[in-house]
Image 1: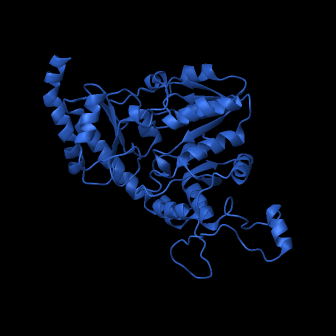
Image 2: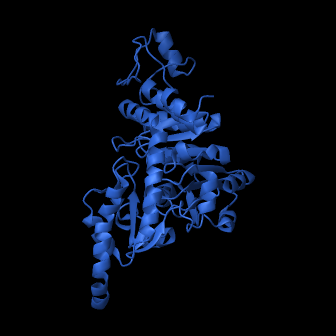
Image 3: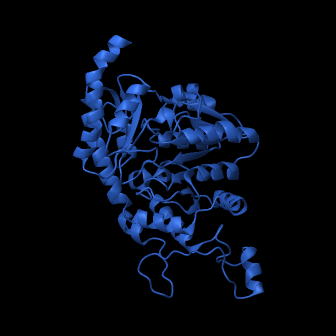
Length: 400
């Protein structure tokens, strides 16, 4: 098999009769059949071929094949967003009365989906600390079907022992679902560690420039694929062909970009540790991170997400964010442009205070998704607000 960077450029490409060099984009809602007999055979799955772009499109298929090759998966289904990928995997594989055990420091929208939407269909979720093995073991019930994690987590970078969780899942007739958004297959391959389903938000690093929204569900098992494909065909959380074309092109440079993101984030995390206004830095590449050794074993590098707490409260965190001039104040990540956000009031604002507390999302927390700008400029933009906070802190302390 070709190496990663070659597959990132070449996998899934099928040239048409026009002999194009770049991947084509098929902007069509439907496809024409040679005969009524062929149309019937296609709709009945008796003949392979395109039917309707809600569930068969050549550009989307090329993206699916390329991402599957990079993840080491047998099957991939492109979806309209990362959250639709999570929803598709759940509603395709679970039924009323089933149970999920999930890490309590998931992305805020995933927590809301499990707590507020799936619960309406009597699919219950127990949330546990991602690193507490006894809590995982104790939370499993006879009706448990999914163990669901993000590793590393967003934004604190906690790392799960994926091999251990895979063994636990299979010993209890469960599926291990891993959201691999923050690492991408360039840094981590969950299937090699026991995952059964891998989720992606292609919106993030797979795109790489914040242009399009999309997601993907990957799996090894044909039965799981058939279930998710049937859900997609019927319910329609479909990836658009144009977005698939953007993601195809994004995959070509994924490895290069991830290396640059990781180098910049690692250096920034080290510098932030030295600033007096910073109370704590969360980055799995730091030796101070409690799962540093595990992350080094499971991942090729440590990712682009650096979270840190300032000394103070929400107002202090906001003042640091508002002082930036280069960084983009937005909740997206995985972009060439560095982004900065306040998780408690953005990405995790719709979950309860108790859920934020369990996830470690404090009011003083700031998340930076390090982009591809010059690191000195990124640091200088952050230091402006941190220095001002350092100067102001004695005054604030007296006033309080």
